[in-house]
Image (cartoon, one colour):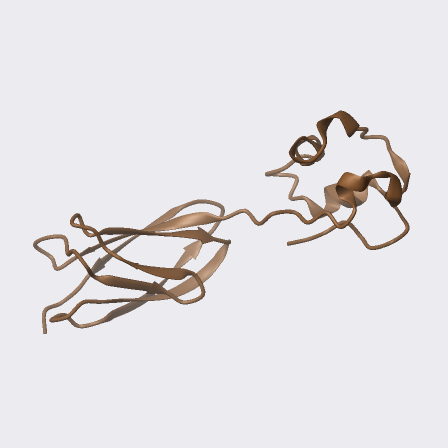
Length: 138
């Protein structure tokens, strides 16, 4: 996450430099805070821009959708653990979603009683991803 530079003055270009321009625009940033104060030409004392004082840009996150089976059917109650991302148990269709993942590479493990644990990694790169895992009976 970024924030507006901690100085007495700044230009709105400072804000644009912090916001990922391919995803968010300066107008979007103001819409999220105080839309009637949007002035793209403003330069001056940041104390007059209360909606940008200590403004922090929220992280953009995505989901990893796991599908877990044994080669013949989908497995319920398999435990999926994403290191640094969260964990959960699969439903009756072998599905579980790990939410709120930022761009990056994540390691995971999938386990279920009676099956060998599987390890792997996946990458979030600007969108949701799907991971299919096959567990082998012990």
